[in-house]
Image (cartoon, rainbow, N blue to C red):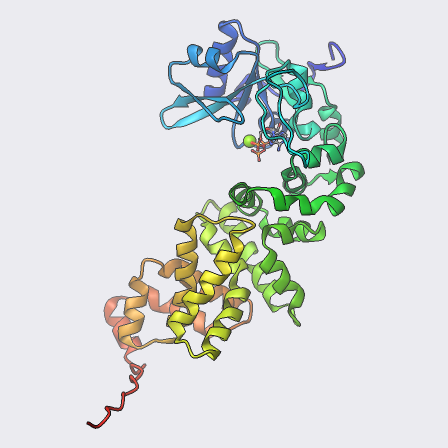
Length: 422
Ligand code: ATP
Ligand code: MG
């Protein structure tokens, strides 16, 4: 340690950084600006994990960053940032900011409920550290001097494996309630505990999440459920009573079910999602939503059926009800919700195995997702496992074999309409 905030004795070296981050840091330094690697990357490197992205913080103002890099673009209103491009990818370069109550005319504004609504006050390195959320996210790596700057006690908390908010936790949660979700996400991801003073307010302040824009909660939900630890995160969110603010219908349906069959279904889905992500396979939010809203869709479906609607219309109407209600809390862009809808609609088609239906179904563009969903229902014990196995086998056959297989199933006979006699 050089002064009380500077650490020389740490494990990060230049070769841990991606070449692009090195280039940006060195160019900014060369142009005379202080610049650091910051946030998740420093935290993850200290924990021997591979960072997701390399964010840069600098004393240079956005316009100066823009002047330093020809291939850069300024973005954001609430938060003016520079993106420095490398082909289609970019690194984020942010100017040091002061806490929201500093400065004068241009100061960050706080809404009546304490939320930060405007955040463009430039500040010093120390101020920038202290406006960040958790101590472990407020570490700055200086490539030139090979030092880490720690103004919030993040190094100690990394050693103690704890998530701790900087400043007064209640004030920080009121400023930005999403920090409650982030605390849980990082605790699960890093296998850290949440410091008691950071943890306690979560139980009473969760309802502040109702003020967060559904689109922002969608982004957060993806980080929570597509990070490779969805099952554990889901269980933690429920333990902290926060899941209800993301997926209120799901929480309700979980509380009301007599057995644990919906819970089993969700947990199995999240386990599968984690497995896929951890083995590098793709996942879509559409699948997540189709799982979480499934109980509600089925309930609404039954009601529409009872009121005399045909199967197809009933599923559509049920899907619309569930999705419309959902987007009031956590949004889902239409390109995904349309896929969820298709997954639900295709479920009844797995019951029909005659050649006409089965061959058309495996050619359907959503067959893969709908089949996974169908098998998930079997895995959770909602339908017989042989139902899933039949389709698993059927897909593998060549066309002649498929014809042989489906031939055994008669095409369901259409009900003949009786003609009225004239
Ligand atoms: P991840 O590995 O999930 O990307 P991260 O720490 O990099 O983790 P980001 O959401 O990418 O998280 O944010 C980058 C940095 O910005 C954080 O490390 C933190 O310092 C700061 N930050 C992000 N969100 C907030 C917030 N809501 N309040 C205060 N600071 C935040
Ligand atoms: Mg990040």
